Length: 306
Image 1 (tube, rainbow, N blue to C red):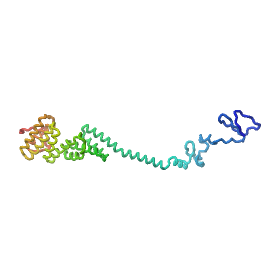
Image 2 (cartoon, helix red, strand yellow):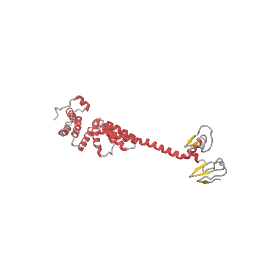
Image 3 (cartoon, rainbow, N blue to C red):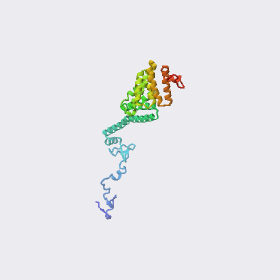
Image 4 (tube, helix red, strand yellow):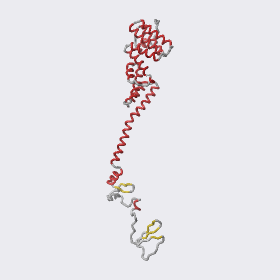
């Protein structure tokens, strides 16, 4: 028999093992000798995780009787239940999907890494070219092209820088081969002028002086403001004169030579170039620049040229 009230009423029978529970501001008295079961008998202890010993699994209720089990929050859990719980929280398809995502991320980093490396090499190549370090620019641009071989533009730029580097080293035939692989570059790259310069050098190296003359005249049509443009035609005619000895070729050489001199280019390169033309006309001999520099370390001055 039980009742609730804000006041306790006395009974003639004494309390036997009575228990008092504070619930919503009222008291409950139990006369049975045992505490009346509550709605959730474990609710008061579950919060502290003390309703089960540390050796008993809170899920399968198995008492392992040995060392304390691992806890999930405050609940002891055995390995079997923990494995089953993991399967429910992370089923196989979730793990496979996550593994796939991670593989995709790793592949993306690896795949895109070469593009980033190529970008950095292109950037450094342009900086090197701005600093007139053509050899470094050619090396870096070629490296960028090798990293992204499917990029046709990078291949053209690599050949462009390589061609300029070879041209600066008097390797005109190799430069011409490189320039042939970068057709399609915008006009701002002045590829046509570079190709003509390479053709002039290649014609001279191969003793194809007609090609030398044709290319030098074509270059002169593109730019008549430079003394070297006129001097190249004079040089080609001088080579043909040294080869055949025809006086008409000498006169043609002198005509273009005088036009070059009229532009009053006083640079050291121009003076050296003029000296080689004059020596060719005077001696009817064609020697390399290295041979000329060794033979005339102080330059050549003609005494017979008229």
